Structure formats: structure tokens, C-alpha cells
Image (cartoon, rainbow, N blue to C red; front, top):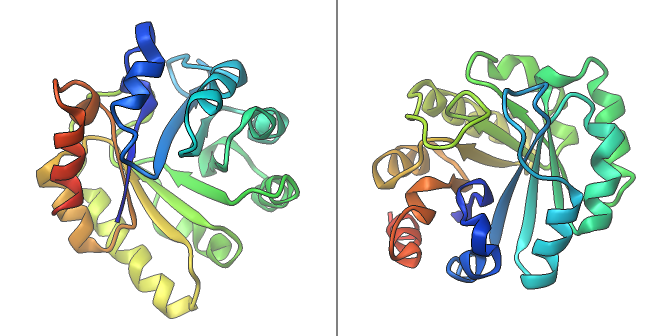
Length: 212
């Protein structure tokens, strides 16, 4: 299981040092918010470029924005390694999937807590990951929504049924307790923000998830 610390909860007053504190992980999760699709604004390609300059970790970039295809190329140019867009943000999902694939990066679909797995079933053979939001997207530090576990279980079964290899990612309210629930349900990647960064020893928190 991959642990992906969420940059949203990092110390932006000393971002390079904050990232070094979680350098033991393979991935970093980067939330991009536009103040339109979600009620918050985070960072843009310039910050992603800065992250790329200080780490070799996979930058798993989550576009919580209204027009992901318009901006995806800018994030890839800046150094994003993987791009995930929201199912709810677009109407032509195939166009977005194909457009991101042309950028030669893995593509993922994210679903909000009120969106069921059935909505994205037809796209599962075409994508590289599914991001299950276990909180309402927009702000860190929220409590885990238990229905996310059912979605992970459903996706895990569909992986076998459809004989596909997409990764299952979960983001929101992850700690040692909820992380174990998700691991047991079949998740591949745990995104953890405040649980990791808001602790005096981030590595110990990463280890607590890794050793579930």
C-alpha cells in the first residue's frame, strides 16, 4: 500500500523542509482547487514546479477544478506525474480521459461522497486510478465518511470482475484507524494530510499507516 502525504496540509511557510519531512514516501498528493468547483483555492502550476525541483517523489495531482482538460497540460509541464479529474466536473468524460492520456501521464477519476461507483463503471477499463473522496472536497482536516469503505470494496470487486489494473486511492480523514478500514477493503493508496503534517514527527505517522 502506498502512502501519499497531502501537500495541502504542509507548511507553506517552509514548504521545502516540510516535504523533506515526508521524503520516505513514494508519492505526494497535490490538491489543485479553483474556488469554483470546490469552495477553496489552493495552488497552481508554479508551486508544482517548485515541488518538482525539491523532490523526486511521484506528484499525484488531483484537479478539483471545473475545466481539468484546459489546465492539465500546464501541470504536466510543471512536473505532475499523474492527473486525476473529478467525474462531477465534466460532461464529456471520454474526451477528458483521452486528452489527459495524450499528455503521456496516468489518468484517474475522482468521485465525491454522494457519487456512486456505478456512475464511473464504464470508464474503469480506460483509467489508471480511482480516487474515492471520503470527505467533501475543499478543505483538509474533515472527519472520514464511512460509506467510502463500501465504495472501495465495490471497486476492488470490479477490478477482478473487469480484469483491470486501476489503483484505488482514498482521500479524506485518514488516520491509523480509518486507514486500516480502507486497507482491509482493498485500497492501494492512502492519502493523508493533517494526520501526517500536523504532527511533530511526520515520519512516525507515515510508519503508523505503512505498518497497518
